[in-house]
Image (cartoon, rainbow over all chains, first blue to last red):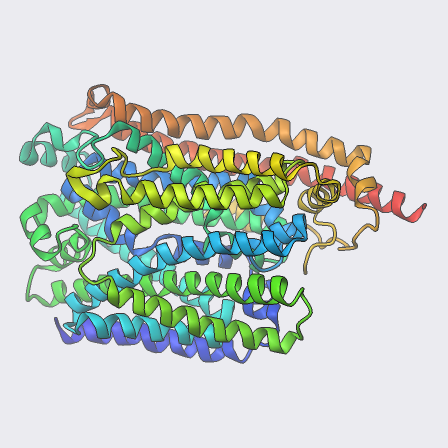
Length: 509
Length: 122
């Protein structure tokens, strides 16, 4: 740990706090709090999406997976990019047109039912907590390793930072924290890539040759990490459909003025995130060669420190000025990465609590504007404290299972609800209850009895249960809808949602 | 980055009026045409990226030996397929934005005007 690391770390914190102060003065209405006043441009929202989407799991995880398990790391990384095709082609514009602040708004617009909104909000909160806790735990491990601060204090520190950003600055502060993070991430990626290229005379194939000669041909084949072939397919489905059920991603489309801007912002995130994900495959192989699997495992069992260690090596090695600077830089980016992702998750969760459950379901929408913002800020505090406590409790627990669980619930419970609300005429409140109940319970059950949790004694062979639970979620939606019976009102509102979604008529501005 | 995206003209702000009869708007011929047209254009694109990625996942899972065939040095078919999947996703995205700007938006405007006229003639 060096002064340079602390300095860069401090610079990120100071910069983001200044932005929060600036944003707080511009955040008074609900539209400003939840959707940054719907004023962002396509490049701004695209960068923020990239900042949101490239979580620590992507930034550090993909590199580590490639360094330790070869091709499976690269296979892991491609899904999150392709997922944006689903968002772009079928969901981003309809959501922007027919929704307001949250995923639950689509359900409310379609069902006009308190039960349906609360049920959908439960799915949203479950996904967000499953996603948030591993990020908090990851932050604790990372800051402890980088700065030597104890785990509990590190987690609490991240918790306080995210509460401050989101409670005061709302979506505007969250967005700019994500944009800064995305810019830092791109810079770090370009610098590390340049050194990686230079080290092999600008011939990237060399890394593959080195990997094969040092680690054997098996290293460059699929199946070193996900040994069950069905898990590969299941993981693919989790990404391609799960993204629609991740509220912190989908609510970003509310921050732009219209559907056309939402459309263009996806191009930005796809180019940025895609390039970065491709680069992680090279970074991983470079880390495997320069740092070595033993040193990577010694620093962190899961390989999460492969990229910082690689940066340190490329900068000149341990105890060199260049090495310290590169390590400090990449570490600061890693911390910024976590802050940006947890801020987005906290905001989306508080939207489900304050907007969906309190304002829409309990109060029937009749809450004064100023009071709504106050409730939203209070729910940020609540969600932040809960996430911090869960993060501290999660110390030493294998939290990787939670990320998979989050994706599985998103694809099995939230995705059917959003997709069928927009595209199925017969869908009704019974269907929402069916989808969320079946999707949630089956995902949690299969994850708990799977190898990620029980290891070799697992009852279920699947690490990623989506391939089973997503069809079950849809089945629950269909059976629930049929049991609840034909609902003329809901079918009429299908026509309303459809017109709104395709034309933007009556959209929130 | 991409000149077309950054220089693309933003869609002119639409009048965000809300029709008082949504069912009538839904059954409007121009609106139905828009929905049908979008569905027909989007469906093959969804199939392309979905099947490409699914095939990658399936081959990685069930045919690791096929994926291990070497192309250049130790750079294998599997890695080439991964790279191909990235480019497929990008191609589909750029295709969609082009088609949506050039074809969907004008049809949408026609539908909105038609719904507006129907609404005012009531």
